[in-house]
Image 1 (spheres, rainbow, N blue to C red):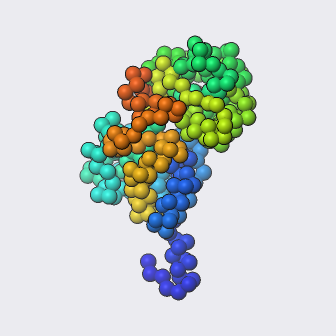
Image 2: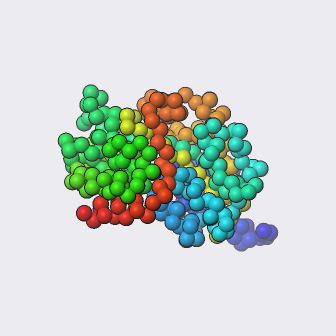
Image 3: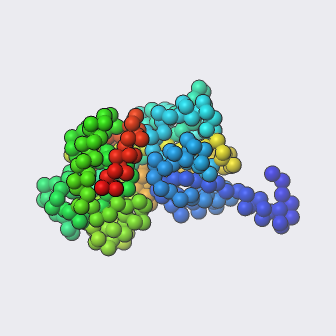
Length: 343
């Protein structure tokens, strides 16, 4: 695009932007400012609801975004069909990390269609119970269990996430289902009945980062289904909180990026993705948002911070690592969650 004169330059500047639909972790203000200073491209963060919401938007072509970041395990099974239907644009593979540059566990998260790359892991992390150490002592027998969210003695002092995929998986792990995504209808009904029986225990169902942090910061609850980014935010605010390591299994999530077919600025989206995967930016994301890089070079150069939880050490912690994989009967999960909320 060629621009001339002051008006033209302003128009060019305004057109250099991308709309990104992503969780808060990768759209931290300081990261956005770094990218804009370097490239002149503004990143506009769209309102994030949940991974399942993002999935629905991409598959229905309703995602008005140039780049979408969401859980790989939700999207991966549907990539072949999405490619066949022309719902995705290929990534500029030559400018991005190659499989050998990723830690071995994340190489399977690169999604190809033929010779084209359509999704690439950007960062990963885990979810467990975030609890207030002033209210729940380290000596509590449930301190390293999902039971902090479900046992009756914590009734009214805990909060769950308003998301069918993640919260049903959490309850399933506590009930002994080691691979929640493989649950059949009977298993799912068991988990739904359990959650309905425990519904009075939940002070709230949180939907976004700010809401989750507020619940803990104001002491409205003592424990939430949470992520290290919540712990890190609370620490900066002076709230004593810790992520536990549930013996039943740590929920591991991998966030991948893809470009919807209706992206208006796909080339800028590729620049943003390339930027996010730079080792220096990955380190900053870990410091600010407590998310970790899939790059093997970054893992080797990093030392886990004990106060942040397992960190990179999660990959060798000995605790079962459970991927947030997409259930084949996802619609039944969504219906079960709706029935729980309506009960």
